[in-house]
Amino acid sequence: MATNAPSQDTEGENYDTIPARHLGVQTRKKLALWLNPPRVGGTNWEELADEMGFEYIEIENFKMKDSPMYEVLHVWSLKENATIGHLIEMLKSIERFDVLEEIQSSLAKDVSKYRERSSSPMPVQVPEVSPSNYPNLPTTSELHGITLQDDPEGVHKELFDAYVCYCKQDRDFVLKMVERLEREQAGPGGRRLKLCIDDRDLIPGTAYLTVTAELIENRCKRMVVVLSPEFLTSPECDFQTKYAMSLSPGAKKQRLIPVMYKQIEVPQLLRFVTVIDYVKEELKSWFWVRLAKALSRP
Image (spheres, rainbow, N blue to C red):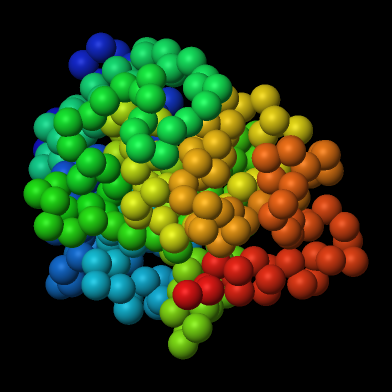
């Protein structure tokens, strides 16, 4: 059966070039379906998590989740070296060739969607945004089934404490933010915070700006804006910030939470909002607590 396991797509592109975050919902569900159950004398999600580099205490915490395999994929896909090719090799290493066979068709669809999205240019920057619609944006037929945890039928829509607006150059800091706020820093009553991160949470192939506008307005209570010199030159960050600002005036002061990650002059658009400073060394000891409290407000 090992000879049937996919190692590259139908056009010869190695799966090692495709980030694991582009695994689709169906592929993730199949992996969870096959790897969640205990397997007498065999391997399951725990062995795969170990192959992924998770420590014992992390694996013990994953056991408390409703779907440990789904959560393991959710966290692992954030890692810089997490690729579909790497996942395939790890499944081979734990000798789950049956799983590779089961996910082969859905994996091919994920790769096709990834290639299609990679070859499509981003829409031009929108100078102004109206709160009543999504001007000059590509349309998408449905706004359910846009995140990995959404029910594709629209019964359940995933909700978040905050959408994180950031540029790719600041991704390492955002990963640290996810680690601290989602897995270490508890909100009121011990509840863990939940952030929306494009690379991790969005299903590939959707109309990006339309989907992020939907998330900012209807799925996320707030938006964290990661400020850096690169942020100032990002059309996507510019759109998302303006869109959040275009929402009802009464929501402005509570929706936006600017974080000064690298020293810049605060954009005029954000000068009326208190900035949480990560640059000054004397403020870093309070930074995560302040950010968590800001995100936990009712």
